[in-house]
Length: 364
Ligand code: F6R
Image 1 (tube, protein in one colour):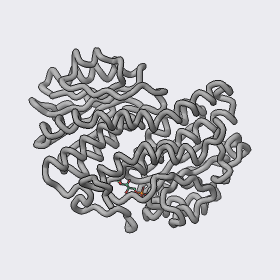
Image 2 (cartoon, rainbow, N blue to C red):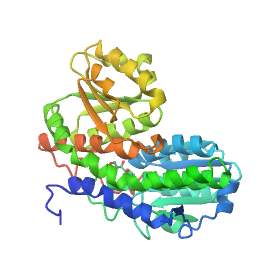
Image 3 (cartoon, protein in one colour):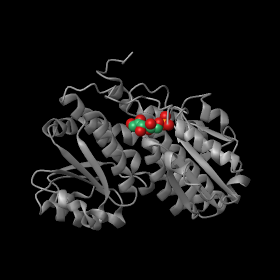
């Protein structure tokens, strides 16, 4: 049942090219996005003035990445909330808005409660859900299924990757109908999304270097992940993957926030992972990496092929294929998933069933 892999997590990491391919294939027909199955019309997208994204855990991290993509591409405000916060803060939900609930299981108690709150207030809900017929899928007004297939490992990988795709497709279609991108850009963005499965596969093919590095750092006590913009969203998920299965304390910080407190934690030998996939933020994050290095941190740099000057600063560099910067999360997350996995294996932990965690959190 593990298809020759040692753990479900490793199997599911390797299923990502297919999961992404299946999700793209479900909604892209003849080079155009078709949301008929979702129930979302161009008319509805055209009238949208605000988007609220609500989710928990890794699905929330998808929302964090999606906000950068949606706001930049579609030019409407996007708010992202943890479901357990949203439901208790009496949120202001404006007309002509939509609430997007992202959930692999479709049963997460707080996400379901957030969905019900939105509906009570008369705001339509779009569910991005993996499990067919789950509560969130049934109660959503629009349902965009991800096609990750069953996910067994508690730590999500392939569902997360397909959720990202769902948000890209939504952004590209909304941008088209709102006229913030032209037809050529629309076609090019879709074509780029279609290249992602191959590029994820290429990233997976480099896994041995990550395995080697992970075994070297398996005894680390603390790891910090830093990045800006989309790279910050990637850092959040990289950090969660690390801590939940390896039990190493890890934190993600917006790189610019370091000097507002966290930098006092940096001392000799602490591992700091810098994520640098966004050209306009590269130099900024790099200078934060130089700062922590001068305080003794050991640096891993995660960037795209071509940015070889990272090696002047980073002690260990990992490269992912180039893609449209909006979609960089889909590639940069792969080495970070592998790192969490291999650290957990090196420590001899129960990778697929980390202590204290459940696959589906149906209590509040
Ligand atoms: C982390 C993880 C969790 C889930 C969260 C939401 O690897 O799997 O953080 O992302 O519990 O679960 P769903 O997506 O089922 O609502």
